[in-house]
Image 1 (cartoon, rainbow over the protein chains, first blue to last red):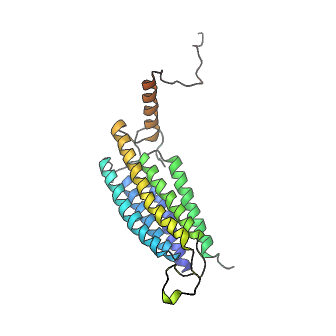
Image 2 (tube, rainbow over the protein chains, first blue to last red):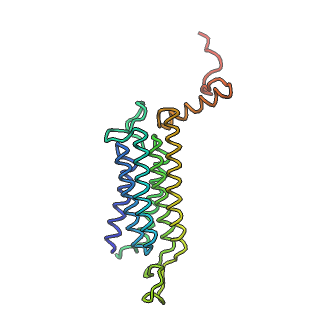
Image 3 (cartoon, rainbow over the protein chains, first blue to last red):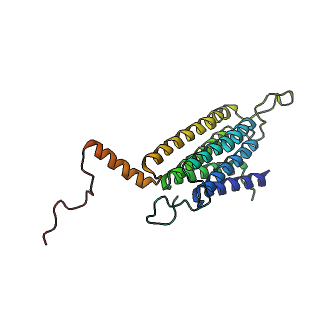
Length: 94
Length: 143
């Protein structure tokens, strides 16, 4: 149990870092779905099964679909390097 | 040395999520990424709320004949979080719609560039000169 909590927390924090640091936005959207999914496992551990169901369905499913559709309409769908909306100073954002 | 109870661990994780979300919200240069950071911040706040109602050894707040007399975790924060998750998706969809409009209007989602263009537009609409730096000397230096 203890190690499971530790592992899921590690997955959550790592995915959250990946959302902020991933080079392209499609990967960031996928990582944000992973955050929601890991969070729903944490809710099950915390004895909140209804919240876990909602988080998995709405947070990981619906919100991922909305984000991906918006990404496609913005023309940023792809695996390139989206980190430079303007070719200016500095290399990384976030 | 005994390991800390899992609540402490989870409080640390929830605070880390909130901190990461705030950092991303403040530091992201791409508008889309700051929307994603808002989602992380929201997830951390939800975890914090559910954790506030947690009680070690409690059962899930669902009444069945087997769990009738046992201590259960607090269901009120869970109901609040259930609402907050759905509202969070609504907020995210609204933010995405606004970002789409910004992209249509200015053709970019870079935060600094959009801000500069917006200020130039409001200055032009108000009939003002474009603002220059306040630190520039008012007159040219005599040569």
